[in-house]
Image 1 (tube, rainbow, N blue to C red):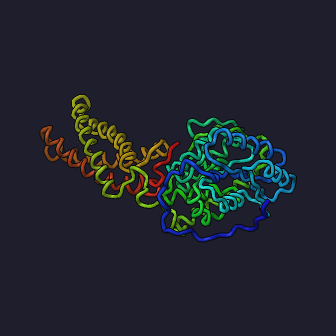
Image 2: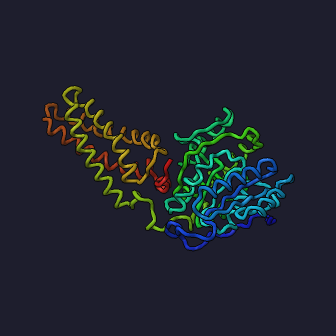
Image 3: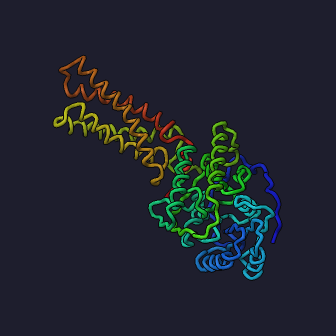
Length: 422
C-alpha cells in the first residue's frame, strides 16, 4: 500500500487546448481502464465487492484493466484486506491515504494513474455492473470526455427509500436552478473520465469530500466538454453510513463557492476546451448557425403561410395567426435545437421549449400588432396584402428570435454539451 499525503495542486498542462478526441487502439498491453474504489472502514464489504468487480471485468471487459482500492485512512481491517487482494489478484492494487475524503481519494488515485480511461464506483456496488462497459465505451471510442451514471433518466430502475429519493431529486433540482447545469445526476457513485481531461480538470477542483463530483462536472460543462449520461439500475445500500445532513450542508457551501467563482469569472478554463476541429457535430460558428437558422426559418415561414391560409376561413385572421405561429414555433424550436445549435437527447428539451414559447410570445406580439395596424389603416385590405404584411413582420420576428435563441435559449455554455445523451 502506498502512503499518500495532501493533494499537490499543479497547473493545467499545455497545450492551451485539449488535443483531438481519438479512439484508443484495439490492442493494448497496459491497462486501458483504472477503476478506483474509494473506501473508509469497509472491512465487511470490501473483499466480496472487489472480487465481484474483478470477475465481472475479466468476463466482460475487452481491454486490460486495473482496480485501485483507495483507502481513506481506515482504522479497521480494510488496509490489510486491500493488501491481501492486491497480492492475490494481479489486476488489483492498493493506495493508502493518510486523510479521509472521497474526493481526496479520487484526486490522488486518478492523478497517479497512467490508464487512458479513469473511473470510480462505490464499494457497495449499488449500481448494476452491467452499465460499466456502456459507461466507459464512449470514452474509449473518443466520443465523449466524461461519462456519468444517472438514476434519474427514464430508463433507470432505482430501489431506495423515500427520504434518499427526495434528497437526491431536491439536490439535483437545486443545481439546475442555481448553477444552471445540464447533467441530471451529480452524485451517483458511477463515473468515468478520459485521463487527458482529468489531468486538466483535477487541479481546478478544490473539494476533497462528497462535492468533488459536482464541482468536477460543473467545471467540465462550463468548459464545453462532452458529458455522456448512462441510465443505471441502482439499489440503495440500507447500511450506508453517509451522514446526509452534514453532506447536504457541505454541498450547499460548495454550490455557493462555485456560484461565486462563476459569477466573478475566476474559474480558469485555459487548457480545458477541445481543439476547434473536434467541436461537437451540429455546433457550427456564427456563420454556420445563421445559415442553418435561415434554412429552418424558410421552411417554418412556408409552413406558417400554409397553416394560416388553411386556418383563416374557419377561425378568423387573429386566431389563425396565433395557431399557425404556435405550431410553427414548437417545430422551429425543436429543429433549431438539433440542427442549428447542436443539442441532442431529451436533456433540457422542455426548458428549451418553454423559453422558445416566450420568444414565440414576442413574435406573436409583433405579427399581431402588424396585422392590427393593417386593419386599422386599410380595413378592406386584400388577402395577399394581409399575408405580405404578416410575412414581413414574421421575418423581423425571426431575426429577433435568432438573437434570443443564441443568447438566452441555447447559450454557448449549454451548447458545449451538445453530445450528451441520456
